[in-house]
Image (cartoon, rainbow, N blue to C red; front, side, top):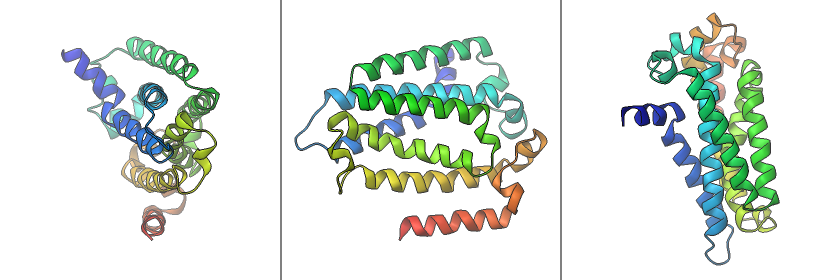
Length: 217
């Protein structure tokens, strides 16, 4: 039981469940009558991809987390790196197989999300703003995935999942900038250049605040 709890912490299961909620909101805003098969399987795709991405993030960031987040599972060695890597691979394969069972559009979006997660964790997170935008895009994509699982054509018709997707993108962008401010010392020590380091903490927070007010308007 204890090991399962640590795996839940490693995958940040609460974040994965929030992503699943996005799928259902997107599906609800697309269907003309209730449909369940596509959204259920797409929820599994999103959950597994989110879990795999979080594991890879912790694997790549283990040295940074020793400074910024010493309570993280891999830092405490509550789960071994080898087991974490195996879980990430299994979750990624599971997401791919599940996407195959929905439709081509969900498979394509899932594939793009997988590639973006890998590129982000291995490279783009070290590129100011671009890494933040990637995470923001992935946050918005959950709503579109739900729509695509129901009707790929109606997904892009307003009002529909495109609206919450844009709001989610802006919300995640604000969140990522604030996180960069919180992690500035650990990032600096590990050679990761973020927006607050480039323009300063106060301008970065003002940028996040400006995006937030635009998001609320």
